[in-house]
Length: 426
Ligand code: C2E
Ligand code: SIN
Ligand code: SIN
Ligand code: FE
Image 1 (tube, protein in one colour):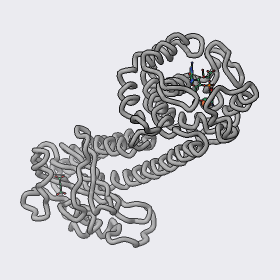
Image 2 (cartoon, helix red, strand yellow):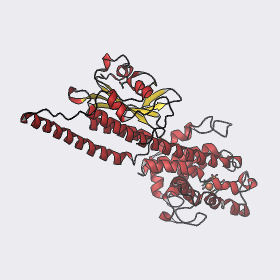
Image 3 (cartoon, helix red, strand yellow):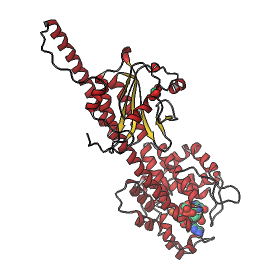
Image 4 (cartoon, helix red, strand yellow):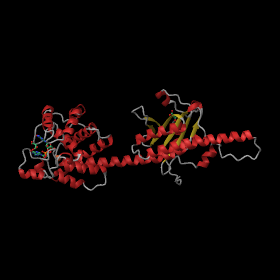
């Protein structure tokens, strides 16, 4: 346990204080004579208690391993809830996290898409936030602090509640870990309190890590998107194009069987593909007509410029975007640029981004070309399968069209506009 630095409203009480508060200090050994039967019975209880501890510890270890590899806060919360239920023989469990900005406690429920939100200072959970003390209530409907609002909303009948505070490294309460309705009609006992305290300490660490990880990831993503959008100063109409083509890329990746995380990485890496256009003179980039051979030489440098900007990063997303930037104009038959790579030598992330990029270029109006109809676009793409594009990627793209066309139609510029009115956030 970390040293106590008191810096918030509720702070971590010492374990001794907690035990004392509950009137359950360690029992003193009795010197009075006991019958053999009493000794045997006591040993029996000790053995049962120990075997329950063993069961609980082995469950804890199992979950610890899973929790330490879970980096998404939502997934982690659901995992912790499952852990608490099985370790503590509880019917339900909830992890509430403190949202200081809105003065609320919020929680995820597996069966519901919407978060549960309750006022920060209400209910038994609120009491735990305020005092930083564990609460063990055998019958909540007899406790005036209990907030029956959640029961009303979920149709669930809460009876016993055990709720422990979760502290961060600065000993501030960051959440409440609560289990409801101990099985077999019993209420929660002292061992349960100790176990839930252990669980909350462990959970706090994991939640803090996951939150930090998520913050860093969000900051990286935002930096990437802003950097990608900087090209807009030189090459117009790019922001919406970048947004659409990265959605398409992720959809096709999923269609091809890549997992959600990889597809999400591609969604965030793909917008960087044309960052190298920053290095192409404006007069070429914004030329209304065909490019001269000399101008093409300059234009064809943009993948290398992009890779130059993005290369040599330790960041996974940045590495993927460097690959996509360098290879998004390679063609399946080897006739692309800059290196003339062929077939599977072209990284798959680039093969996917290529078709997404071209599809969006074709279905959009560009300074050098009119907008093509969906039918003409698909004719070009199908006709270029095995030439410009990987046939497997074309197949996946066609299969995914029902997901792609709503994005194309929903986020296309309206008449006379170059950008759609509004884009969803990245
Ligand atoms: P972009 O406008 O983002 O286009 C990306 C890719 O979409 C093109 O890569 C090409 O593969 C495909 N594409 C775009 N328009 C058409 C089309 O009308 N027909 C077909 N079959 N494919 C099309 P590409 O050709 O390597 O061009 C790279 C970039 O060079 C383009 O990015 C654009 O910025 C610029 N560019 C290409 N052609 C011209 C042009 O005639 N005039 C000007 N000013 N720029 C051009
Ligand atoms: C409360 O803390 O009062 C709410 C308990 C519940 O989740 O039902
Ligand atoms: C190209 O693919 O050569 C440029 C696009 C076009 O204008 O055809
Ligand atoms: Fe490009």
